[in-house]
Length: 297
Image (cartoon, rainbow, N blue to C red):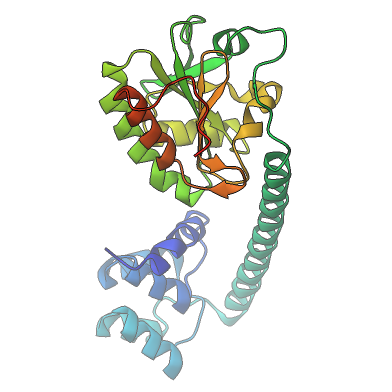
């Protein structure tokens, strides 16, 4: 496997390539480390040209990246070089583009920080004992018409009676941007595929903490989530469900059909991990833990 450092820069190289801008020593070095051969780079240079110089430092960089003697000689000879005026103009354009990307990155980081602060504020609100609204009698009624599921890579609406006969429902609070979530989700998928066929009274429902419908559906598709999810544009109306999810994700909250909490990733403010809920589920299925007694351990 190539170092992640180089793979992280590959999209920038490809983006520049798509715009057909001349190459620099830095870009050539990155492309060599990403797997391009010196021969393929010379073919690319014949179309895009070279807008840089090969001094002693740059030559060492190219050698370290794996450039062949022929490639370095061609660069030093000026075979692929632009005129001085064109080189200056291209370098100025590339510097402006780099500045624009830096500003976009900074803005994105600030937006993510604000979003996470909002999530933390919402999650630290006082938990409520019974998620469904006062005028509903069950989780099934509360979520009727609001569930979707990935089938053949496409989001489709789930039947209104999908939760009607479910006695144990685990709400999974997770997001595509969350690294620990992406590590845990495959484990949860394996658990579900193993247990759900044997226990038709059990279901998982995904409560997305993603920032967009695209991110939510991408996450569901990539992880092959076999369970239903609350429709993205209905999540705001179902925020009461998140009151028991704690202050961080991934988080599982197990409830009965009326919304009574049986087990949670959190014990008070202490994060015990979603595996705790799976262990409690195993105990319930084994008859070692009453399904209608809230977990206070």
